[in-house]
Length: 190
Image (cartoon, rainbow, N blue to C red):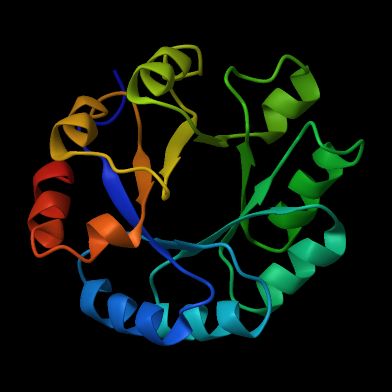
């Protein structure tokens, strides 16, 4: 069994910087991190608004320049597709050298390459509740597992079922703008 709590990470839409800033200001003291998929000035605005709350970029970094751009604009963590490029393993090292957490995404099982396995300590999983629970059991206990449901509509019961299996869930505005969101964060993050 993993942790007893599940952190909810609000996904801030890159296009709606003004609305996103209002969401950040409302949630900043209640959540452990924020996520967005923008590079450039929208990311900087979001990063400045989050202040001391970590910011994860869910758009995949394809090059060292993408990692540099993400860090320059304020990202604390970046998504990297380890299978998309020959240099995927190098990007994990680049992100770490910039003091960012690299998260491998698009994986349904732990990496088989020992080099990739040693570099990758955090993963972004996608899929239905059953798929996520099935995949989570294959990863080592020390791995940080984050589910990206920013475009899904999870209910409170589904989120509660992730407790003990998943460390965090990225949720979209349809959930984090509800009146019950802060209460849900508190109930899952005990």
